[in-house]
Length: 249
Image 1 (cartoon, rainbow, N blue to C red):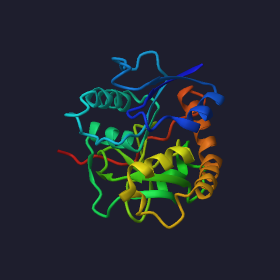
Image 2: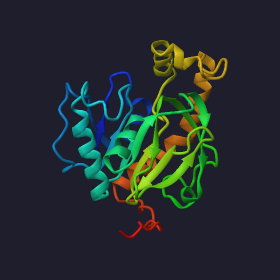
Image 3: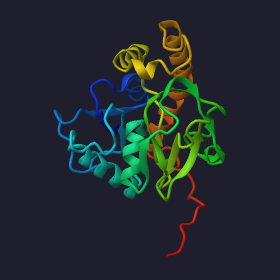
């Protein structure tokens, strides 16, 4: 089976339906919740890596010193082209681990069900190409990626924050939004962060609306999860080499 390391930085942000989609596609999941569950020293023995979200900051090492090891694993995955999917906080950790920058969003938090817009590079990407022009996603974040890593290609944006999805080294992906949530998880976040929850459109975080939103998310992202497992298994060719050139020193 295709073995995936799942890093879960926060107990309130489990892998949810994404885990079901990955396993039904043939993946074996090794879920680690630090610091209670120690992270492996390397990615040896794994075919891919997924890093989930959490309520801490990407550089909040004083309160969560194990974040250093998460960033090391993400940097190693990026450097060795290990198929990777980093979600929300995970995408921010991947960014800062590889030369990008993260800060609190100047336009305020992005919260609730929404859409992202595919960019040019997404149309020839093995994971994003078959997705609709405006995929459904779930947002719940204060911090944003202000500067992408130098080698990253932008795959999706929103009018509020540009860096919603990106790819590095042909098979290493970061997405600022969530695709793994359940209505219950989002409601729990809204109860814990009422000031953030108030920023979404009226009714968007009510039960029926969240159920409908998650059905739309599943329709789009379940096939995406299957393609990620195929990528990790070597059954799907990675993206073409980036046409971007770094400036000469």
